[in-house]
Amino acid sequence: MSARFYGVIAIGVLLTSCFNPNYDRPTCGPNGECPSAMICDSQGICEPLPDTCRAFGLNCPTGQICAAIQPVCVDIGGCGDGVVEPGEVCDDGNIVDGETAGGMFIQDECSHDCTSIQTLCGNGIVDNAGSEGSIHEDCDPTISFPLPAKDTPTCDGDCTFPQCGDGHFNPNYQVTGVGPDHLEECDTGIMGVRTDSAGCDSDCTLVKCGDGHVNMAAGEECDDGNNNSNIPDRCRPNCNRPFCGDGIIDPNRGEQCDPNRAPSGCSGGKACTTVGTAVDPDGCSCI
Image (cartoon, rainbow, N blue to C red; front, side, top):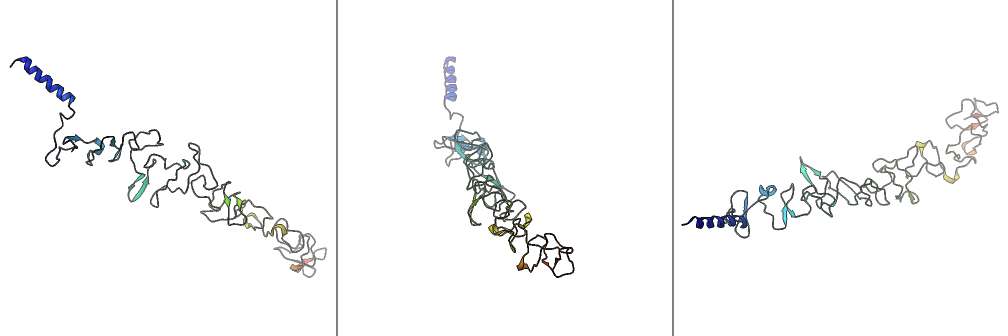
């Protein structure tokens, strides 16, 4: 045969290898067998597995690829490819919320659907990993990202439900079931337990003598609300109890006199009397 004939054959083989995508791919065996790292497709041709899925025997169909760091097929340009696409706020290369390691569930920064940065309170999406997870949002305030989350009437800025006694002051939260309904003015509670402090009453209002709430942490001895008065036998306007030396004779306490100063030896809230051993110059002593 002529050299021209062999040249034509060589060109034909070269063209076949260039334009036939299956030229270097073997056909499947009778039962779909293929060489290592290959899988039989619908046309009986052994196709190479994507690198990230090869070890798990996955062959993604047309229009899908293997996730960036997870052996699972995802849509091309979709969540899990490791690239943040329009409509996504993150993409960490997988489509799970986290992984279990050492018996503990560790939350990923990005959610399984690429719509939430799970570690960020304030993105408007409630992220909750359950009892085994590290993220437990009750709520998530109106989207303010990238600014810090804001308090709302129904959600604290730390993504927990507001509660008087939680230690988080939320000026937008209306306290109910603790006296008349009112907005929070302060909150010094501990882990949901309402407590008095020097500046805050346990009902989450600011300390005020005359509010009817006795706050001993603020130094109050009594508080009868609007009934606080310098009238005898009343809680005084400064929320102190009547005492010998306050200048007011309190008959119900057995007082017979009160010189507006404590007679010698009178202390501890004792009552004033004209009978006793510690006699004041005004003729008053204490019981």
